[in-house]
Length: 466
Image 1: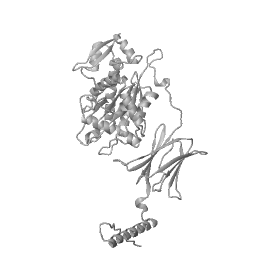
Image 2: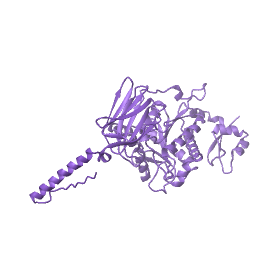
Image 3: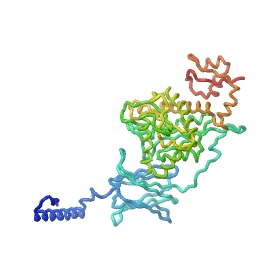
Image 4: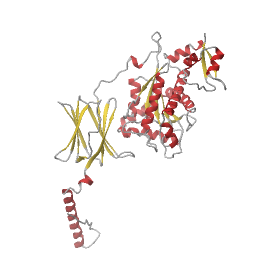
């Protein structure tokens, strides 16, 4: 059956009869349009539909993301006996299957959906225990269309700091390890930058962060902790909160691998927080992109913005910013032996994730994933490990020069008189230095925490005495 109708908008004619005729045609057209909806012709155009569902598992919550063809109102409520979370989406149909979702290791036992008589779609999450739901809608971006996000938060008690957070080096000494929080940027719904070969920033930086954690675990005097250890998203302020409150971290290092509209942009960079403006246009651009992550993960509230403004004027930030800059200089110097540098100085910008008055904090851009050559390198485990070693070396050098009271590095500096010092010259090797001072190469490595045969001219080695 074919329906043909014409809608004519009268009103431009001064003739009363013509004007009335236009109005009659408009009414007829609207009537036929209504008939078309009644016959189901308009549903494919105007009704909302769920085109896909994705799942992200985080330590404190499980995130479900519903991909929608258009935005639609929704309502969330909870039921007891048994525990359930119910989501109603107005005038919506389910155009995908839910069987592919792997919600093992979560408190969700089953997910069901059904069409209601009123045209709404009801999705029911059967739970093994009570969870706290939060929901919000997201507008389309470069990667996704309209989305509805359902976060199911665990009602577990807040994790408090334990003695394992402050690891002792030796039981008969009263010094502790320094705690380094390693933050892999992005995650989950937020892939970060995407390279030409499809590499996702969230995956590359997590791999580098894990390499850095493994290396730091072998390092005497350092206890590393991973802020994100899986494919899930954490809000920027949550990352700082975990580092401060859960791990009592002394240092916060955020790992990124961003992109730029010009594929020629390349090189590693190190950034600290700026209290004024960005030190370059690129620094401003990268900070703005990094700060937009919370738009993917949720809505930034005015209260949070006000808190950040208060933090920035806190005088406690002065010392933190200064030492963050010192740390950045040492890491940048080490990165220069592994990668080309985008800038040969530590840059500054308003990175939201670095705004903490308690911790020395910086952000490492390991390269530009938008650059085909760097994307290829960043995908390899060997290059990821080289970058991690460089960050470790810079961190070690910082703590050696500026040891925190009560830590292994402070103890080491206090007893530095027990060591001779040797400045590496051109042509030196570990074996020639060891032979000159009559010490085993093994001891030379242990004291200076050297894992490879590569040594740099100008670096000072401690030589064991006796």
